[in-house]
Image 1 (tube, rainbow, N blue to C red):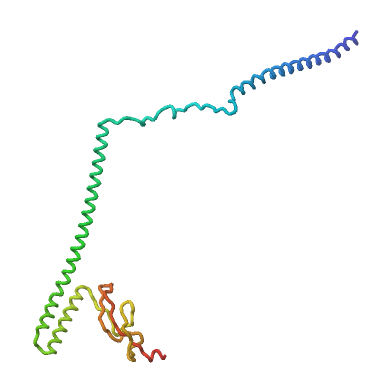
Image 2 (tube, helix red, strand yellow):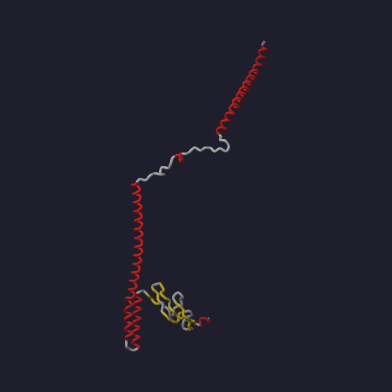
Length: 230
């Protein structure tokens, strides 16, 4: 009897194992049935949600298209219109006044420049009037040629003094190296006592006002044959 009980115990675990396997297979079959039932429903839902081929999807209007602009078509009152017009007229009037003031300032500056030029010219001419008077007296003189020469020399000295007061100085010439910036060569002369390319003679005096050259001196340049042969 004890051996029969042991055989029953060996058989029972196998039966319980088979029952568990059957239960698992049944639950799997139930799940498969549910999934197959849900697939057609989901496919039909997606088909209803997707639009047909060739049909346009309607886009719901946004807030920018629904709500009109607050400033578009806003009426302006008569008072605001008059105020804007008055401001415009004021700005135009101010612009016209500024243009007139600028034109007047330009004309005034040009007139002052012209007056200053005339004043400077008159001041220079006033200093040379005594020189002109002395030339007139020299022409009326009945003295000898030597006396006339002495009078002209005094007039030249008077003119040199006036030029010196105006800060006008003659350009140095004889005995100076020839400088094309200050001298204008009229020709050359052979001289043994003067170095080559030095000014030998002055034909016409040149003048400069401070550092500005008024006119170059017209000169003849020395050509020293001894220095050339060396």
